[in-house]
Length: 629
Ligand code: BES
Ligand code: ZN
Image (cartoon, rainbow, N blue to C red):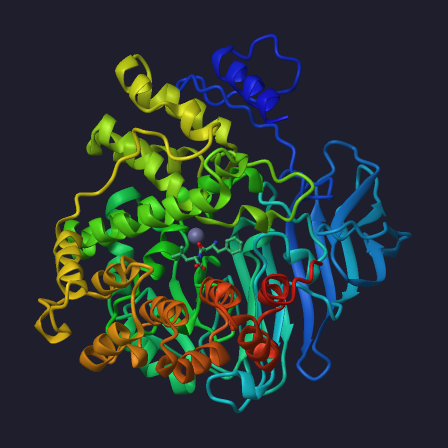
């Protein structure tokens, strides 16, 4: 299958498309780019494309008591292809009724397909303009996390947030749920009085007395960027186009942490052109948020675990901000092309951080990323097809592609191209790419064709040196993978060696170490590390009580490995509050490997399971309880 696909793609890349049977739309002739715009999204049941669905109007009521969203989704459609039905994706939705241009219409729901949900069929004709679906969400809605007051930071009022990427929008909105279909939206959302509602759209920043909020997103976006949060929230501005929302008890800390976010937007614009979304705000979620951040347009959602108190983890905001170009503006056509979203964004994130903090700082991010890449390749197997940049997730949960390959192999590939083409030339090319495909969708092959025409052209040396096939349609880490100079980490390695050879911890030259240097210091510890050595480090640096979640996670992993029991109460506190899968999965996995650790993992997981997001529960059920869905 993979070999066939590879051969097919290679031949696509070599041939000019004239004479090709499928309808391929050519890009503007001045660019002479061959643009294979047709693709199949294996994770979408809907038959709509961006030409067919133009606009969504959502009118919903959020019941925090019933833990249910109910209301209507009205689609404005343009049936130019004279389709006989509109098919929408749904997941665990109850469909109450459907109208077509105001008249009640017949409809039917197919049986559910694993991961994908049920296709909703609605008959339409050539003149159909509006299709309205009246519906309710189910208890199994994978996009929704309903928090009791106890599960929030302030512990006073309930909270709801959505996480729609990758294919969960369909569990709260009947929609064409594929990254290749874009639409604009408006919404009217009714929430309990006293709570604030926010969406990935134009937002008001004050609580109103009616509990009714209205939203508008005028740029076309794919369904995975639909987002809603409802809670007891406050707002603080950073500059005239950036700001932060958080629970009241968190807002000042959050405002402090994100002081530089306004400058960050400026740095990003200098690199790859204007920010096209108007405002850029960040919403800090309660601790159970299962991921680090989500690039919802105009309003990044993020975990509170990056509020370290010293602005050391704001790289994550640079990442989500960078998606305003790579992902939200130019979007991967299918989840098989996920590296176009995440690899480009990781590359862009590090360029932003280099602008903000200097090259030595960025080099640390590159090196930590390289280490992640190596570990992931070892874990998946160096020959595994899942280590290709172009993935094949057909028949699987798209979350299967959610590892460091698209991120780290992706951004290292771009770095290789940068190094060989020259930075100026590469930057100009990327700006052009974002501009050319703004508000549209690209496959891996579209990008490669565009690069071949616009960047490489007659430069055969460049084409040879970047070994595209090996990177995109081949496994593992290619030999030409660039690796950052390692000046700061080199110094850390020396201190680690001295410490391991018996030098007292206090004598280490650690002054001005950033969180990244500490992380590197801990990551490099050998398997033979002793609990007594853990204690020496802890006595000197109080690492057990660090406020930095990345360092804490690594430290607790070492504590499990070395039986350093003194860290366990702090680890339990960490596991009881933080819901980020990036931390939960390695910690529970490490426990399962340790002698006697399985019992501890089961005990802690049973105790705190309800604090975790449904998707985190799914993966931990597998890791801790060996239960497969
Ligand atoms: N878009 C992703 C999050 C995502 C990907 C959610 C796929 C669901 C499916 C987001 O931009 C992201 O990459 N977040 C990272 C942080 C980043 C700094 C690497 C995370 O959450 O850890
Ligand atoms: Zn990302």
